[in-house]
Image (cartoon, rainbow, N blue to C red; front, side, top):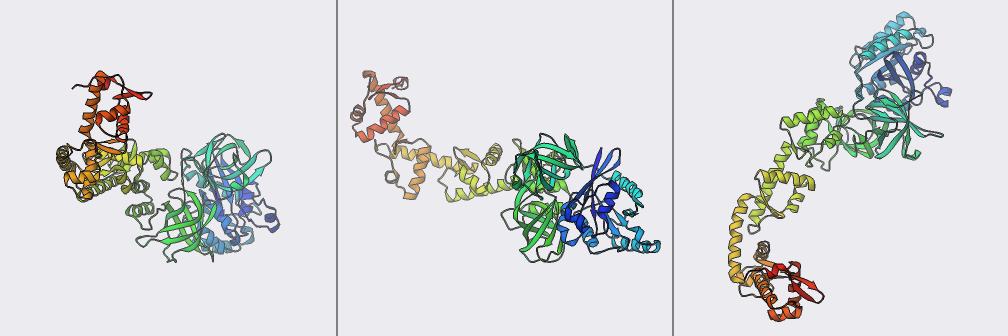
Length: 626
């Protein structure tokens, strides 16, 4: 079964709703005010079977200029447009405006219906049709079929139905395997059931019991029930009109303009970078109205100075849930003049500068190159991305389509797969050059230090911890740099520093022979090695890392002194079963202040074990060789 969405367009009182009623028997003017005034105010809906395997859902839009906002809410997701023009009036202001809106939304298929032919003679009809053909000659309707009908008398209705079927048969089938998406156009409650929303299923499918995400709030909701044009069904698919009974919501949490989508698709942001299709200059920061999906969103538009085409930044007054490639229409806030159409390319970034990858992204959307757009989106990310994250950034493309593009980009070496996640090759190369330059500068400024802290390097590279560790593993494996504990260094520096460190160790071993139990602080080290204070700190750190100095509580002791103490304890326990702090103090001829932390050090390193107020020897100390 094939399902499509048909939308009406045209001037007020040209008979859009009457034609739908003649085709379907459904009066789409459901509001009391609509019936009293005889015009459509809000969206109306009907079902039109066009064959055994083809059903159209029809969205009827109001024609009055005051209700253009409602017209735009019903136009964004249609497959086929019906431009209705009354024979007795011809092309009118809203005829022109509605056709312009259809063009800006990117609608590609449609037909022209000349209604009220019972009010015009043949000669007049020929003149009107000629005028209309000239009017649509530079639009997507230039080769569209024309149908002459009278909704009042029924003349031409069957021919219209036949033409609609022929057109519908040529339309591509919406992808029901793509991620689910629906813009909400109505919200109401039914006693005993709760909240019900309606909308056109743009892509994918959803079943009773499934969960989806209400955007932009991000709330996960459950589908309690489904209807398709009044019939209860277990699932709805792309191209169908759907009424969805939702669980887990309050009425004040949901409204027209929100969307239901697959849980892991689409992005939410208040700032979007867009490509505009108009050429006129606008004031930077001008307040505008964005019409996208079924919603109207207020915001301001700013131009990028670096852009060679109409790449702009749209900052909205509330978050917008959308997908890359979504089409929208921009009108000035006041007066509400039409500016033109836009294509959303990605959420805006912190920088106000248009990066090369963002330029490439805009260019890709201008050329409708989905693979290039996907590549540039990944290429601007410093974070390694999972396949699911790449799919999310691709908008609402089918999963298989995205995976196929990722595989091709990886095969072509444009993307690298590192431990199951992805990074653009150009970004990997950029980060590699950056870390090399960073370490080179650091080694030049701090030649005595063994390397730069890994955490400081990560922060300077602006990488998250997981991405940094994965990229670091690649650098280490490739010999780009080496690591020593928590520090990073270029291999060339490590070779030099190894010689420097050994020289320091050799000098310290001689100079510290007579320090005994004295704490080797910076002052003592400066005196013994004849070092200025700034060099003493670097040398002290190096000696600690080399094991020459041993931290005992809050003091540093020469390592050979520790070895000497352990040997003394070894010999002591040959003749004694226990050792107290006081006895250790006497053995070392020192104070209790020094003896106590030394005893705790012996406990910590398993030379002794505490038994009440005394210590007993462990096998480790008893088995020491002389």
